[in-house]
Image 1 (spheres, rainbow, N blue to C red):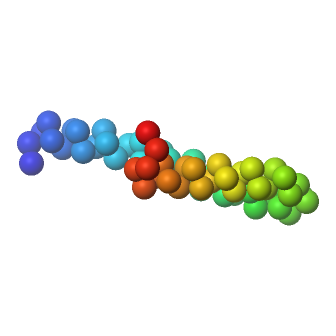
Image 2: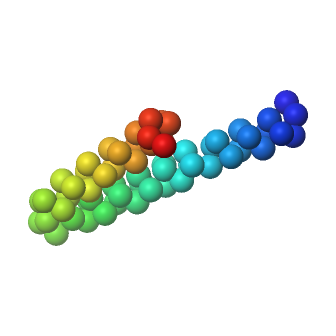
Image 3: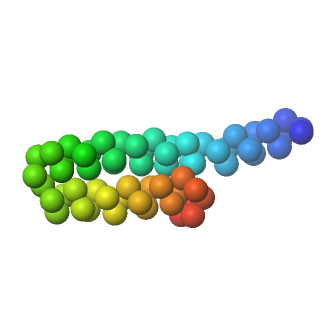
Length: 61
């Protein structure tokens, strides 16, 4: 693999890694919202978490 290919692969991986981190942070906030009894907020965070997980799989750009 050339240096250019390696750089391209790294650049393609960075957004996926970022999306995984965002999804994990959202899931943590969702759990906190559930514990606080904020059902609507927890639901909205669940939807956001699903979107971030889809992006981590490469589904959203």
